[in-house]
Every structure is written in structure tokens, then in C-alpha cells.
Length: 149
Image 1 (spheres, rainbow, N blue to C red):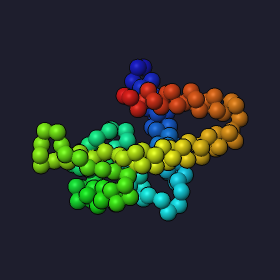
Image 2 (image 1 turned 180 degrees about the vertical axis):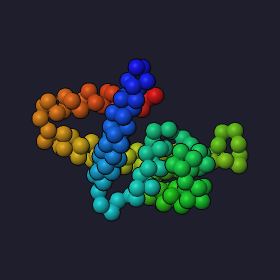
Image 3 (image 1 turned 60 degrees about the vertical axis):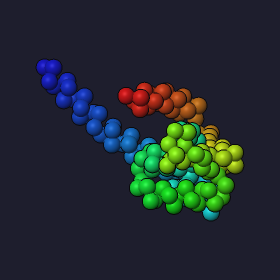
Image 4 (image 1 turned 90 degrees about the vertical axis):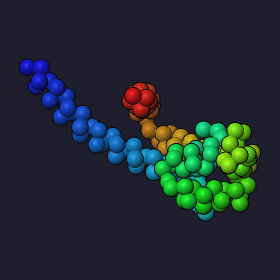
């Protein structure tokens, strides 16, 4: 009898997992699109975000976080440096390495990007009923628990 309960729970969880993953992916895409057209590329914004969240990283660490090859990250960082959004400094213990960090201008660009994304999502949420927003608030808490493992 216990086996049947587990099977029923799995059958319920698998379709939910697919639906939820699809909804999260689509919502994430829409939120990422809430940025000024012609501004930084998605790769550049992602690298800047990683530096903002992690603080200082070596180029290799940043490439690993972004899941790209080091030559690709070199190009991305070069574009960010050209715009004054990222700066290099000497590694404190390894003279062969450098550390990357967002500049004040980079931090400001990141903050504006965050504000634009939050504003888009807040406007979308404003179109929902109070009950729907309450449901999403509960769902957000649950999703955060799931994400933490």
C-alpha cells in the first residue's frame, strides 16, 4: 500500500515539475527582456551581475560562474572594461593573476538594470487580483525553500 502512495505522489509531482519549470523559464526570459534595447548584451549583463553578487573574481572564476570558456570571458570582460563597467587590479597573492570587480559606474548600471526588471514585474503583478498576488507570495516562499535544497 505504501508503494501506491509514492507512485501517486510521483505521478503528481512530475507534471507539476514540467509545468513549473516551463513557467519559471518563460518568466525569467520575460524579466531579462525588461532592459533598455541596445544596451549591454545578455552575456555582458550576466557577467556584470555575477561580479556584483560575488564581489571580486578572477577571470577564470568568472568564466566558471558564467559557464563559458576563458577566451569567451576575455572578450566579454574586454567589452565591459571598454565601457568602464569593470576594472582589473593585481591579485593580492598571485602576481600572475588579476582580480575583476565592478566599477562604481558598473554598479550603477547593474542597479538600473535591477530596477527596470523589478518595475516590469511589479507592473505585471499589479494586474493580478490580491488573491493571486497572495498565492504567488506563498509560492515564492516555497520556491525559495526548493531552491535552497
